Image (cartoon, rainbow, N blue to C red; front, side, top):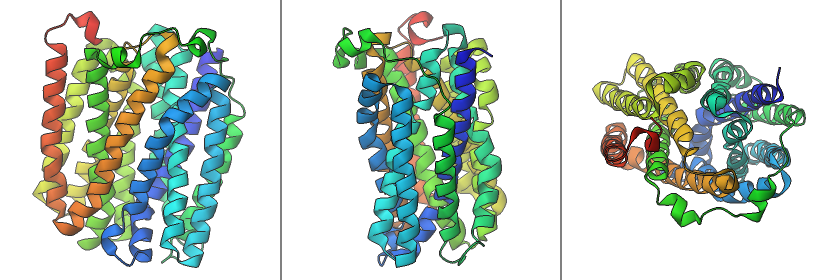
Length: 394
């Protein structure tokens, strides 16, 4: 096995562990927040702070890894995750909503580094292998789709099931396993030309249609997915559906997010990246429409599955498209700018999710997603129509 493929395999495993942590957290964090917060409309505030921390760490993480390398940066990120999981356990024991918010924010800071797993794979891959390397790393989340909901259910019984403290213990264990896997990765040293920063200005790079199309696809695809996914456990609890049913819906959702990645890279190579992003938009629209039709378990399951697949096509497609926007010397700042904007929008939609649900309704949450997807569609058509296929990644 070549070094590039070995690293991709290890990065995919790290992605699986990270996404398992995130899946357990998404399944339980709003419920824990609901139990700890006096103002129940703040139930999703910890998840909002998680996204704020992710956004805030994207640029420092990129700059750190540019100087000292990917592996060192990833290990620092995992250290933040270990501390965050430990504080989460303490916050539930002490019934402290403030400490729980801090703990989830640290887990968000960890995610600021996790976002670069896919770029680390792309950096080390040849051009012909790049789309597949990105999709294979994202596909690591398939393990999370299978294992994490099961782990969320059994860990709930380890201690007091009403506190979900076992879920936080499981997250701590996954964080420690991530540290072990990261220690085995052999990433290339930082590029000399990248540290000298001889590339174009960031404003010039961001002004390219290819960058704009990529970042809008990522922002709206990820943002709408988070908007709906964050409120789903609360909506299912309100029906009511059981916690087991909620965990199953999240499982189908995460499976939809990551399982297609085994094929997404090949689909991009065969059909082109823009058609795959457009199919992702269509699937997201179908997901929102399904949620608007009913509140049965089947409605939630089908909608969240479609939402996951739609996210996958938009996310992998946009990430692949972004690699056409920069040279090796420009990769760190371009990737950082892209992820900062993407996670900034995700932060906004995470914050809105809880407020829209509590102040209005589950239907409102989904209705807000419709015009956002229309914006993504218009932006992609605007960005690609006047230019030759080679300039838009087709």
